[in-house]
Length: 599
Image (cartoon, rainbow, N blue to C red; front, side):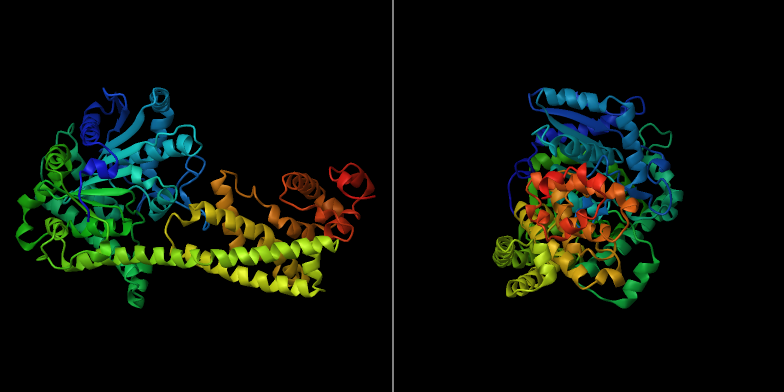
């Protein structure tokens, strides 16, 4: 709900958009001989890589119903929900095509050559070339931007692209602050961006026909079969309705048990939008939207037909829209009649409202129901920000409680007893007071974790430096106390080892935050579980756990040197020291820790 030129607002010049669209259409002509079109801009700034689409059904759906798989985290380590450890889903056929392109072409070499010339990389694609541009962009972010090997982020420009990943794509890209570099242009009535909302079984018969219709090299190019096209459109719309309706109920907080039952029976598409969407109304106007929940609703509602539009000729025109991006954008970028839907909670409900926003929504054909769904998406986003604000208000409380825990730890050192053992024994008032602060802190962190599990916080929350640092300090000070409490009450005898059965999510989540932020492998920052390992090892025969003991000693040495573990673990009366002295003499004499422990 702001004005201005499109290029200025999304960070991409209009001539770059037009060039990317032109090359994306050109890539179809060069395929299959060339896996992509590479062209340097005559100016000093951009290098373009445009990918062709595929017109074979197996390159859209690898299998039924929707053909999704988990992303390869070795190539895309950021594509997950960090705390929840939920890996993103990607369309397998698109992913396979990209893997083949990357391994069998000179794409990586040419990209690095453009980087050496200090170019901004622009990945682009039309139709199913769009997912190739998307995956290439994420690959670039992961390989070069995330590790600071290159400081100029790429842009991904797609035109009529099908959806390629699930909601974790949007969540992860927004957390990494990469989503704003993914810009998708969608014609109001283009069916292709909605296809992946339908299962293969519902569209298989008509999909090959539609792909042949759209393929400029096919003998059936633009040859129209009204019945097949209408049935295909109806199937896509029906499935889009199911997905959008289920999502709308979530947005509105609906708890209809019948709907939940149906949703558990009917398989719904996992694919969801992400990035910036630019909807082309068909009359030269553009509507820009970033909220992924709102975009999903528009993908459905913009496809609706009025009674007078339900005829073969109009449906024929809908399918031809997929091939009209170049001409449409040329007109739209000249007109610069752009509406930015930002404050969705203020979307006008009436088609009669005399505002630019109302006019744009009318051009998209949005009903009152559609506008209510947009408002609900805005309200959910607003609620997430309110939740974050509430959590941020607890930062001072957390810091003050952590300060008290730190003071408790120091008082234990003065008493020549480790604070793990002091807390486990619980002899002094200070131990009791430490327990009060522990419970206060764990309650606050548990509330945060529950919100993260339900995706009730902004996507960027787990990437915020202040919370990563605060969560790490919390984990390092408080988890040893939780472990002490666990073994003090012999809970391991009924529940099992702390690390296997009982470690709270508040520590798993905060550990993952740090490991992800520092690009460390999973489990790297496990120093806070040291005492749990000691408690389990000390009750087992040495011969049975010898290798684990050696590994733990090496870790302890590294943690002590890095200041992650205090030297109080070596005090004479510490649980660790007492156990370590029971180890065989040959082991102790050759141990890397022998110098830390008094004879």
